[in-house]
Figure 1 (tube, rainbow, N blue to C red):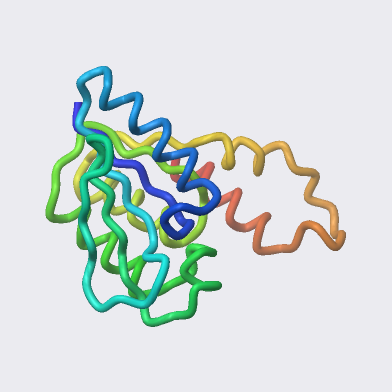
Figure 2 (cartoon, rainbow, N blue to C red):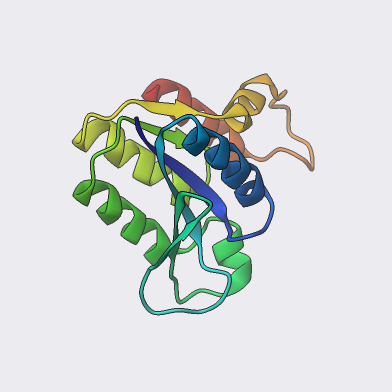
Length: 151
C-alpha cells in the first residue's frame, strides 16, 4: 500500500516523531510510506530524504518556526495540497486538524478520491465539552463541526 502521513509539526518535534516511528513499522510490513512535515528551518523548496525506508518530505514556508510548527504556514499548506494533486496514495492518514493537515486531506478526499483516516486528535475534539472557558474557544467548536460534516 502507498500511504501518506500528514503531520503539522516540524521535522523531529512532537507528533512528527510519532508519525515517523509508526511509518518505520509500516515500511517493515512492506508498505510505501511518505511523511509530509514542516521544515525545521527556513528553506525555499521542499526537501525530500529517505530515512529508514520512509520518504520524509519537509515543506518550506516563509513564516517563522512558531507558525510552521503550529501547522499554520500558508505556503506550507498550499504546497501540501499541490503535492497531493500530483501523487496517488491508497490512503491518507492525518495526525491532526491544523490547516497544514486538514486542507491537504480534503484535497485528497474530494479532488483525488483517496480514502482519508483521521487520528485520535480529532476524536479528542468530539469529546470536548464546548462550554465557554479559557481552554476552548469558538474556533474549536467550528472546526470540530466542520470535520464531522466532512467525514
